[in-house]
Image (tube, rainbow, N blue to C red; front, side):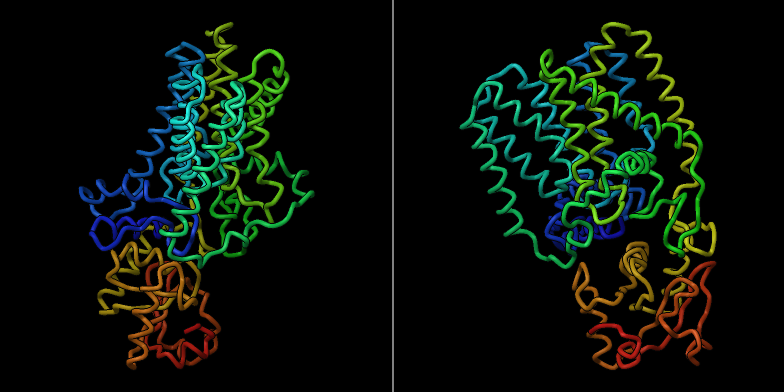
Length: 468
């Protein structure tokens, strides 16, 4: 999120126009930058302003979910309750405001595409114009976060083949491909981070974990690839999951299975329900190529769950509206209870529970009082957070001489080449092999969880295996 925040800062100050998440040739998030910039102008480059920008895109997606639900159910109450339920469903409590490089863009664009397919164009014969528009949307979804495409494709394919509009289908596919290639070729400036670190060949063993991984994703109770209630990395402190989050995630998995089955058995009676069932199945396809569990890659399953409720659930609303609305109300109350439990949510290092924002701000203020304009991090990711919360008054780097945004390490390396020195900062205990070194006599603790050691030149840092 700090990377996204710095991208918005650079754009809002007129320094550059960032199209892709820094360091990647995927994760097109220019929409997120645009959505957040007005909040930066009003509130400054803060995490709250960044979250508001993401919430704006999420809310627009929810608006189109409401439109889809109302089209099928003709019920204002059901559609409103469903929209509210999505807002308090555990994983979306976190991801409604999370700036993660393309996820919110894909969420909004996919829901917009579904509204066009299921509502605005549903009863029309596909045209060239529609093929062009849909192709452009698909191209940008691919660039933003292609994880959303498998669940969307059944709707797209059926929209064209139901009227045998093969040429228009070809136009859409061609536009999507050309747009994705063109934007990536001309606007992506770095491929420092490779998605191959997360995905590989088909892993048959993952199928056995399908429902447990789906449940973990629905909880939202994770940070990167770590389950907060059961972390595998020793630097994480276990954070207990609220009971209502646990319960609602389990209900979500049962709903997912039920809706998929209900949709698939309608293959002769209701084509749109059948396509919706296929969409749920397709949204899980990514599990097959995941090298290990990573709950955020199953976010599209939580997205298409609510689309399925809007389409398939609407049939049952018409039959028993009071019962359907009553069940949704119970789910919403559970969700609201779970929301309060999220006050405990968040990555906690091995030092125990602390206020992460407060601690990183203490470190930023400390470095400013020491007149430190540059620093090097002993661990991964800290440098991005510190640069964001110091508003780039302190420039940091980690191990890579390139990293996601080369201008940062270049500034520090130039300073070191001139004979300058910089401090090392990091989590207490992560001393980069300096534990028994005399240099540790100069170490100072900053706040509850960080350390500061001054005076490192390039030669010393090279001995510590930093790359230049």
